[in-house]
Amino acid sequence: MDNAHTDISPQAGMTPRQIVAELDKYVVGQHRAKRAVAIALRNRWRRQQVSRGMREEIMPNNIIMIGATGVGKTEIARRLARLAGAPFLKVEVTKFTEVGYVGRDVESMIRDLAELAVTMVKTEMGTRLRAEAEQHVEERLLEMLHPRPQGQVFLNFTMPGVSQPSFTHGDPAQWEAEREEWRRRLRSGELESTPLELEVADDTQSSQMGSMFSQLAGDEMGRNLQELMGSMMPRRTVRRQMPLSEARQTIINEETSRLVDNERAVREALERVENAGIIFLDEIDKIAGASGGSGPDVSREGVQRDLLPIVEGSTVNTKYGPVKTDHILFIASGAFHLASPSDLLPELQGRFPIRVELDSLTADDFVDILTTTENALVKQYEAIVATEGITLDFTASGVREIASLAAELNEEVENIGARRLHTVLTNLLEDILFDAPDSIASTDIKVDEEMVRGKLRPTVENKKKSRFVL
Image 1: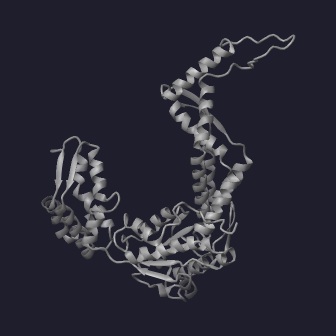
Image 2: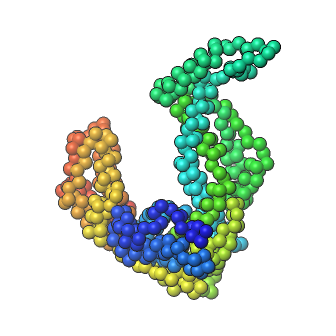
């Protein structure tokens, strides 16, 4: 059992080079940041291969990513979590406040991560059990379509002094034949629109109660009170009519939930949180500042003090049980325009030994983002307008002009990184997206340098207007 945690996920054994190659599909540039997170992820796998005693001593190397907005900090962390198949939570540290102030306490992020992990594991178990659940679903649907006669049992033998019951559907063989005919029609898809009446859980009262508790006691305590009251009160059900296709999905969800071993799911989820969990602390620069301040600075430093034991390693109580945070990987990020990582508490700085500065994006980077990444923006817009029967053709010169305008706006207005491309493309294609399909002049549209310049260059050159439009 020494390597009990080795197979946390099927992709956890990827090498750093493989991880970087996968990240390259979604994030342009930022090779230093990719190398850092790839090593951190691989080290988690390496930790699982050592002896149990040594495993407990190996702590994760938490990372601070420094860079302007829109350069890929969040995307790197999000894609990394998908590669690892790990529970991943992104939190804005600005919503946390020191205990005693209005706001959420920092331990709530561990409880949220545990909740996400339980949902993840149950979903995975449900996927594996789906085939078995579908067998049960078919029988339940058949019972609704062609129910067994009430109060009657088919006997294949006779008993002395007991006469055989009469069957409203004929003899047992005839009933079975009818049942198989219904099964055939069900499997062929003939009955998908057949209306059925199904008894489903009524969550209206529960959601209203949760909203009331949240207003009175706050989100965290409100959820706890809602769950407590929900366990004390009987669950209400209502009968609803729906087509068979919708009823099938409802029953599949019920059957899958019934088949999933909840205790095992919780155990596996907590194990994943403790050994593979990743928490992305965004905007950490907003809680950095000189010590000894007053007013909001007190709360900022208080958040750092509250955050410290979580990052160092402590035990947080959740509704699923205690969670140790010693081996959770924390990736923090911030622009650090008005502060620097050295403005954080020294103890907190020590818990983030790896610091990576991300590069600002250039026009060449924007060209790559628009064309080479998986599901690039250009490909997305081509697919969107294709649904209206319109062919959108982005030429190389058109893409280059879009990238140049985005880079120019970032330099002169405000640097928002790759997010500027969304703004530029939305304004460029606004008329096409509005006119399609009613009054579009042509179904073949070429987006070249001339079109981009004619549409956007006047706005870009009008600096005052571009601040509000682009």
